[in-house]
Length: 122
Image 1 (cartoon, rainbow, N blue to C red):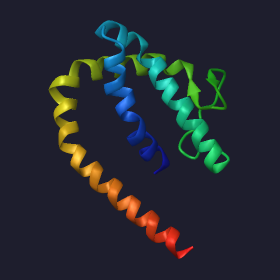
Image 2 (spheres, rainbow, N blue to C red):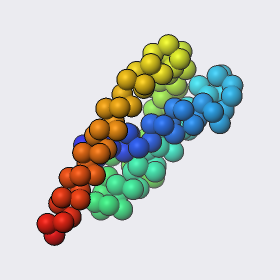
Image 3 (cartoon, one colour):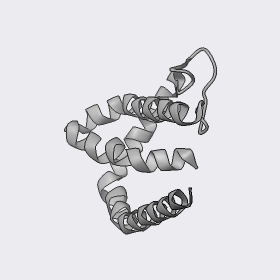
């Protein structure tokens, strides 16, 4: 559940802002693993600060760094994900994003209402 909300918060950066910041499609694909590792580092340490440990994931092994928040041997899968996103962004992801935006707005409003309700009881 924690990873879901962290991804909801970072997805605009992971996709839209990243595309705006890096104009070359080839460069976006080549640098995509670094983008994911930045996401994992930010999310991982935020979760560690909030819960004392990363409750969403933890990598192990010789290639796990930043307290198990990133794994270097995932370079190729992240590169392939970057390629899939690059190829499908305009045709698939943008239309899906426009469908999901109202849903996410409703979820955010509901979560804010629940937070206010719970905090008013404390």
